Amino acid sequence: MALIRGNHVISMNCGRNAGSLRIYLQQLFRKAGFSDAARQFELVRIGSPDKLAIIHAIGVMGIDLQFDISEVTASEVIDGARSDSMWRTFKRSFGDAFKAVTARDESVEQLRSAERVTVTVSIKVPTGDLDVAKNGLNEFSEEVVEDEEADSFVIHLRDRSTIRPHEVSVRKEVSIEAAANTVSVFQTWDEMETYMAELLTNGQLEA
Image (cartoon, rainbow, N blue to C red):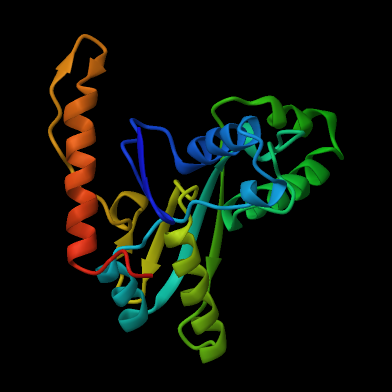
């Protein structure tokens, strides 16, 4: 379920990420006869102010980005033209590089058909490196934090602490009554409306 107010979206996602919701809305807009321009949008995660402040104050020493091989080597990316998110662009670019490397050997190429194998890309800036490099990694980490589709990463801060996906976005845990395999639509809607009102009251919907 998704509650939309202006340019703000709250989702009760049940395990699905913003990419699924974005594709659904784009197809809905297409069926409604909206223009192509109306379908060129991204759903961006609102990063927790606390975590973004920590990145600024402490700085990032490195970031690990993890991808499933089956995803990065997919031959096609749905709707992957002008509206690609940063995460999707990075994943597709790395997938192209991975396919080029594995294509050199038939035995190695078999990795591309693996269903449960993951690849981790680590980006690190040594302590003694230039400030511009450190600032660049901080900015990159903030983009990862705010990209709703970035769902598998670890940010290593310079005080040796870490930030993981479930810690970075503005969210609220609620209890919803369940029956069999479904939940109360009306209770869910009420919780989402309440949360939207809370965000509006504390000024987090002004941007």
